[in-house]
Length: 272
Image (cartoon, rainbow, N blue to C red; front, side, top):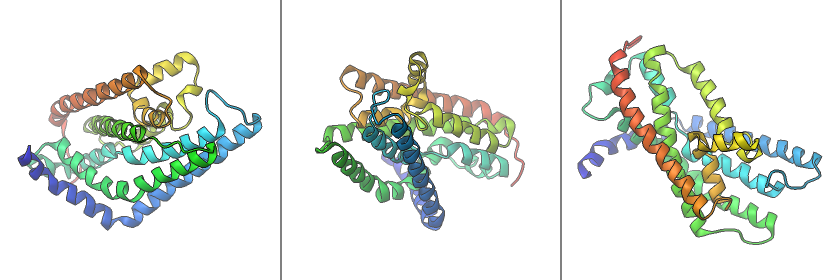
């Protein structure tokens, strides 16, 4: 294990240096996400205002505000661009450089992306958690913070990130067949945004659709961690959704291994 970590730690350092080099791009990315968060707030404020301000599908307006902020935070924590990177490397031929190295293809992506994410987590995670708790305290009139709830949220985010990472790797391998993923990746992001509860909470959907969507891996990305943090899941229900996250993480991990073995045989480099 120590030897494997020593092998892949340079990829973490490469990820950190990449963020440092393109820090302006990172800043605009975060500003774009923050703008989307504010837009969601004003939309839901208008919805609740037109409905008299009461609870809608179990969410009051203060809870919806917390939900929006937590969705922004969770989406940033678990973000993965593996599908885009794999697609671009296949398109321009740089994938050949990874193939000649005696290391795991998936692992190099994982550790490099962890390096990309480390500055983000340090810069925004703690301040955003404090912001969420201030909002919850002001809106409810009492302190809502729960240390066990925060720890469970962090654990859920780790599982959600692994699901997202390996799902995107699997999706990226489609580029071995169709060569260019830009359009497919855009469509994938829109669909996942809806299925993961980013657009609207899944509890707003009709009963049957909600149950089906909760079983899909996409609910485990954003919706499950947020609901855990907000205390909406507890007891047996909490462990059920944790178990579902573990299942999907293992499923996509295994699928990525299988797809790699099949897809790499179809590699044709267009550039490089």
